[in-house]
Image (cartoon, rainbow, N blue to C red; front, side, top):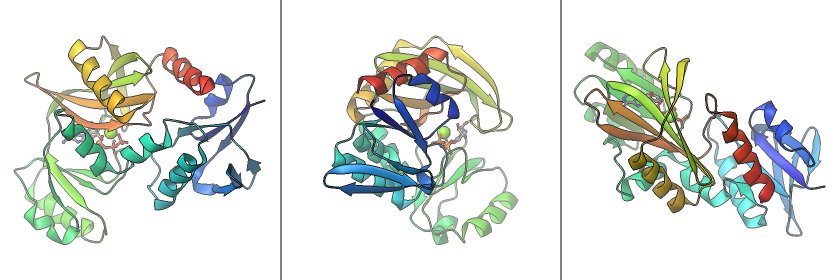
Amino acid sequence: MKTVLIINGEKYWKEYFAGFDVVQKKVQTSEFIIKDSSLYAVDANGVCKPDIIFWRLGAVNPNPRYRNILELIDYSGVPCINSASTLLMGYERLTMLNTLKKLGLPVINFNAATGTQHLKNLEMKFPFVTKVGNHHGGYGKSLVSTAEQWEELKDLLFIHQDYVTIEKFIDYKYDIRYLAVNDKVWAMKRRGKYWKANSLTQEYEIIIPEDEWIKKVQLLQTHIKADIVAIDVLEKQNGEKVILEYNDIPGLSGFPEDVKRELSVIVKNK
Ligand SMILES: Nc1ncnc2c1ncn2[C@@H]1O[C@H](COP(=O)(O)OP(=O)(O)OP(=O)(O)O)[C@@H](O)[C@H]1O
Ligand SMILES: [Mg+2]
């Protein structure tokens, strides 16, 4: 029986792999070993020698160790969904944004500094959004609307040792996720309680994907060789659209059941 190792991810994934030995481990509490060209994952529950890895890391704080794990998976040749080299490409937020920019896709311009002591030089017209480091799930991101808020936030950000980007706040009508799995594309509008559509999400609506945006997400998918990828698009009040980011381990909540089935079939076929 083949062993599927699921890294993090929802509990429900186990149900999609009947006929396989399914092991689920958290990257935060696991170590990886390569011995005589074989890959092993070890945690308090035991050792696993995976035939395939299904990488579903969500919004955990980034850690250089996770990059090392992906490099070892790549080295071992054990297939991973997405591939370890694709996941390494999207690991750093700045690399991810550069990839979109180089493909000619419409991303939001930003001011940036490698250290927080230069924050005062990055200011732009209010309202704007500050993003610190490489975090997911809305963490490390703040909307600044007034000089007083900016003053407060600057003091708090000063203690971080990470890079910062500042971009204008887009007063969007919709936050739309275009999700590509294999050769299929879905689209979903989302709305949050506050300005972040992905935290405290209140509304989901599956919509018909537009051809132009199907092409864009597939251009990216081909370029980064992804089995699954999502782009998050903000539609402005005037109808213009910009890409906020791409996500190579996208959350699937709100998407139809077919998405999970399609994804699990990719894993099984590998
Ligand atoms: N410049 C902006 N203008 C308006 N809304 C924004 C802007 N940047 C981010 N947002 C909102 O905040 C949400 C979170 O921001 P973003 O997607 O950049 O980071 P993240 O969610 O932390 O990353 P990830 O999607 O990888 O978990 C977005 O989904 C969007 O709704
Ligand atoms: Mg996001």
